[in-house]
Image 1 (cartoon, rainbow, N blue to C red):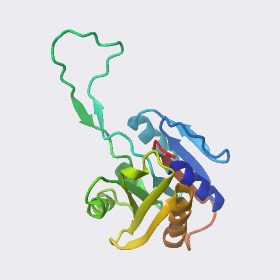
Image 2: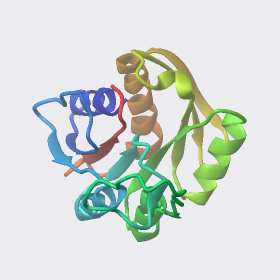
Image 3: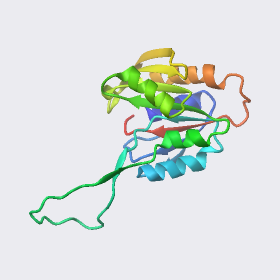
Length: 197
């Protein structure tokens, strides 16, 4: 979805900066790509770009947890049990929402159950202007099926088809509800990429 959204944003005349984790895809040549590995790096890079952007499309699914301790070398077997302690990573979208001045934010909610309820909870918790709800079937697939919900909790779009076609529909909603009427100068969208097309 990240690549499809970048393509759709470019086709709509936007400048695009993609902050991407390690993925096996090629982004459009017209997009500026910032490659990162960890959730912490994604947050830092996103913060650097966000101030100059008009909006954020947060299509990535960065890790929610990270290990407390990272070994530099291979851990040899000892026969003893190993306890793995994890801590929550920063919520990138919520962090940027708290820092926004004029920007709009579109989040993604990939859920396995209670799709709409959980998407609405994320919409509110992360202070998004729109949230795009999709399911596990989107991972490593050419097609996607999504619902787009606005900040009042109203369903403003439901689309299925190729990720490219779905991305175009999402960008049309963003254009109509979030961009229309804004100054056209420096319209710059940022897309964080997930690990799929």
